[in-house]
Picture 1 (cartoon, rainbow, N blue to C red):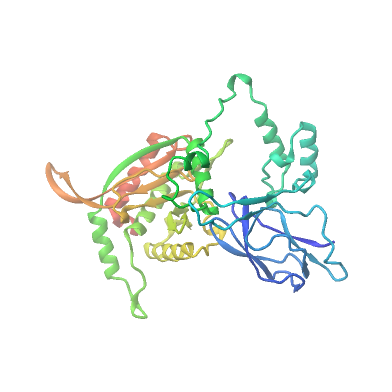
Picture 2 (picture 1 turned 90 degrees about the vertical axis):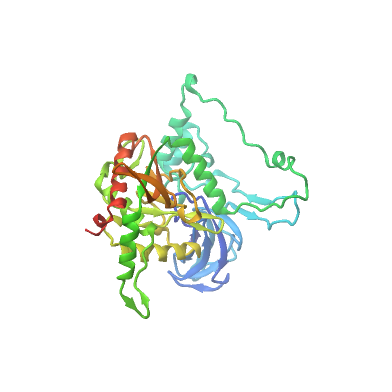
Length: 421
């Protein structure tokens, strides 16, 4: 039997990926483990390896196509097998995105090719039987198994969601304005149409989901930075020189990451993730740091940040940010995490509130430091002050707990020597 090469799922939110280029020509010999094609997700680009040795044939997903997770893109034929024979049930669902059209009132077109029968939907035999008994269409159910395969738990969830008492059936949601409706509001020729890429669509979907399903609660605090700025300058001045350059150069953001990780270690009840059946209490403070990239943002993660030195955090986030901008991060470098930080202080932003990125229960929004008048011992004096706002998932971190962990963070910022112990 020929071996399928399928589009792998490398991100928990990944539904499809784009074939950017084939690295092996159709009809060529490949060995198991050889890279055969390069795929792009909304967050990264990566090579996919051959699952077996043989002849590459029946390449059904061409370069530039979007393919659903778990669908075959080609097959590998063993010696003696005929590569010219199309394997049945193998038509992947692909979306061929058209190139942007240079006109003000025509957006990018797309052509969707879908499998004709439910047999092309990946599901376990048990899941198929359960779906048939429950009268559910497999094609309408999202699979959570390997490579997007539908498993019995997916059928149980779909069946439960369908049984809703009439008294609590939610009212239909208002549909957003159509593209045509929006275009009618503007004079043709006075705008250009830039089609959404995969990253922008994913960001939009996740933000809507987060604000719709996570009850956000906000607490803010002002932090004096004078002691932190002094310590930062002293540490940078003391940095060893190697090959003509200091081995580290600390930023305020590096120290913010460390302070937030230590605060979560100090208040472990806030270092959690919500699930419908239980609270996940994390052992380490794995901090995602929002990095702006062309077309959107991504949050590479500093693992166990509470146990790392400031210099290690500084060098690691510089490396992660550089590779994020080049879309060279590995999935395990941006998936998961227990909390996140979004810092817009370098853009002159005084304060803002960030949207939580599930499964995180918290995100810390950091504004810029500025000179402000503050009262010290009954006297008004100038001080460098930074405003931070903590967004919490109120199901997991309530107001008092949010205030406690934010107070711990402020203590580390205002007495930064505690970060060195």
